[in-house]
Every structure is written in C-alpha cells, then in structure tokens.
Image 1 (cartoon, helix red, strand yellow):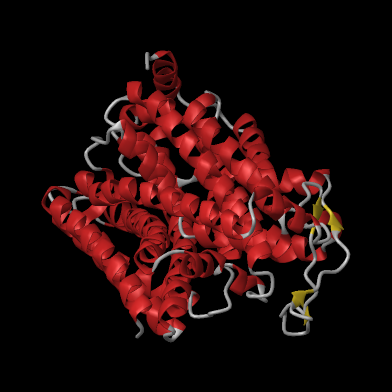
Image 2: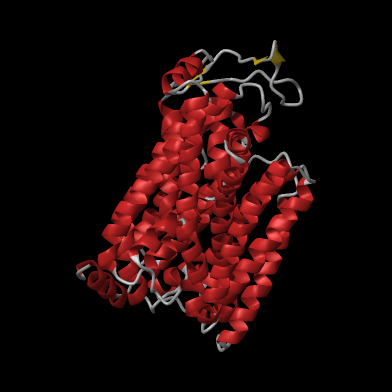
Length: 520
C-alpha cells in the first residue's frame, strides 16, 4: 500500500468511526421500543428530516450511477432524469408530506408504510399489509444490492482488492451499523452524510472543470462528440462484442447519435413519479415532529436536490472530456467520480470525497434494510402471524430479517459488471408504481376502497415486471421506462375497481374528511 492510498484509507476510516459513534450514541434510545427503532418516536427536526430523506433516497447512484450515465451517453439521458427527479422531489414534499403526517397519526398512529395503508382502510384480514410488506421486501432487497455493488466497486478500485471480498466487507459494516442504531441513528448520520455528499460533488466539479480548461472548454470539447452535449440527442459509444468501447489513436469512437424524442423524454421524466411511493422518503414525512416544519424542510430538500443532481451530471461530462478513454464499459463509467477524486485531489481530500460515496451508500442501505426488516417483523410477524408478540420479539425478528436480506443482497451483487443505475431504476420503478398511485389516492380521493387499493398495488407492481421483461425488450416505441406505464396502469385499476365495488364505510369517509379539513 503506497502513501497516497494509506492517506485515503485513514480519511475514510476516520469517517467510518464517526458514523459508528453516531450509531452507538443513539442505540439506547433506539432500543426502547419498536416505535423508536423504526420511526424515531416522530421527533425529527426540519433539517434532519429534509437532509436524511434526500441522502437515503439518492444512494451511491448519485455519485456513481448518474455521473456514469453522463460519461457514457452524454447530457440528455442524465439531465432529463435529473429534471424529473428534482420536480418529483418538490411535488412530493408539497403535495404529500403534510397530509401523510396527519393521516398516519389518524390511521392508528401508523409507524410503517404497510401499517398506514392497512389502517387507512381498517382491514381486518390484513391483505393490504401483507401485499405491501412483501413488495417492500422484494424491491428493497434489490435496492440494497445496488448499494453493495457501490461498496464493492469503490473499495476494489481504491485498494486494488477483489471486488467480491470488498463488497461483502461493506455489507457487514452496513449490517452492524443498522442493527445497532435504528431509525434515529440512521437519520442523524444521513444529515451529516448529505452534507458530505454535496461538498464532495461540488469539489470535484470545481477542480475537474479547472483541470479541463474551464467550463467553456469543457462544453466545446463535449460538443465535438456526436450527440454528447445535446438535450434532444444521445451519444452512441462504439463497442466491440464484449461491450468495450473501441479506442483508436487514444480516442474513444462514437457512432451516429440517436434522437431523443418526446416519448423518450416523457419516459425519463417519469423518474419523478417514483417519489410518491418511496418508503424511505415517506417515512421522514411521518417522523417529523410537527407538520408546521415541513414547509421549511421542503425548501431545504429542494435546494439540496437541485445542486446535487446538477453537479453529478456535470461530473460525467467533465470526466469524459478530461479522461476520454479511461473507462471503456458502461459499468466502468460509473467509476468516473472515483477516478477524478484520486487523480485531482490531495490524498486526504480524496479520502473525504470517497467518504462521500460511502456516505451515500450507508445512508441508503441502512434505510432500505431497516424498512424491509420492519415490513416483515412489524407488519407480517406481529401484524398477522403473532399479534401478541412483544416489542422484544419484534426487535429480535427484525434483526434476523436484516441478516437474511443482507445475505440475499450479497448474492444479487456478486456480479462485478453490474450497472448500479440499471439496478436502481428497476427497484425505483417497483416502488413508484406499487405505492405511488395508492398513496396519492389514499390521501386525496375519498371514494377509494380496499378492493381498489389491492388492485392498484398488484397491478402496478406486476406491470413493472411485465413491462421490463416482456414489453420493453421489443424496442422502438415500446422502449419506455417501466415506471410510466405501470404507474398509469395502477391509477386506472384503482379508479375502475373502486367505482365498480361498494364505497368505503361512512366511518372511513368521516375519517378522510377530518384529515382533509384539519389545519396543518
């Protein structure tokens, strides 16, 4: 290990020790009850609510996945995705946050998303709770795998160590941290990690832009690549049979650019719809100490997201100009942030930048594991299998669940060639289509009933798989991001089935009216 690598390791190790310290500090309070462990006793302030929501949401794909897309395909795909996410973030905070905070208390003081949906419709057989909990287990296991891929790529690149070993090492660290600290530790560390992430991104853009000759030079050089710096076109890297970009005279080759039409733009903007169904964000709305503070949180979150997404996209653009032939596959392209950090920054600062990736990964994976564990232990075990289970039993089952989910995620993440952005996009579509329409209709449509809710969840979640595996491979006009058709299909099912079946009880309608007319 050379001196530079040792300094990077010291900086990252110091950060990890600090994060573990946060987990230990909150361990006693987190373990008082399942409500404290899974929702922090609804005690989050506005800054922690906003920053932890966005940090847990963005994950390692913000520092690796999104810059990788920009490096490989150019501006359009990454930029339209970022625009969709920014708009979706703002609308979610504006439309959903206050109503959900109020309704989750009204609906039996719910502390998990499946519990809220179940209590919202006052179901006795817990069908909604079971379905939603199972979907959370499936999609969050996939999500957790994307975080482990990030850890594996990060550590294997930095320390020239085997990918699988580094990925498993990262998984063990995240598992221990999540078991110890629970929701409060996760939220507190996420606040700090959100700051680390945005500082790391901004530092790399500033230094990278300077090295590449300034913003003007970056733009001019990027325009020389066919379709690379366009909003309505997309670059096509020329690759060989193994998917490696062809290099000639030290320069990467590109084919004729493809168009980026209205349907493709609409499909990419659909990323924003996913926010209405993201458990890790929605739980923050439920956990804030007062609805009056959500407006402040919304402004903080919106500013953070716009800055972070914009900078992440430009890292990919600058990286292609500064290191045009360094990364020759779509999977390798996701290492551009690591490459620029280690090449452009002093070792200690590079270590802090790498800590930014680690921060993003930890902040997301602990959220995913915690919510998935709560789905099984709180909603299925205590909610259905053993209703008189004590808090200690629930906590024990949740920790066993954490271990099992981590092991499954490790197996999914074994492939070193996995593309983080692709893994995240599928899980994102799954949550957005399964829970997004149901959340909106549950909060704002009095006529929705239990049958409509079940149909919407099953239809939305099922359509994600069907469109991804059967329809989208047909290509052409069918090459639409699965979230958009699945979200629309779920909405149609909710409305149609609710109208074709008996309306909700007067008690449910009265409860809906009370929440609708309640002051923020």
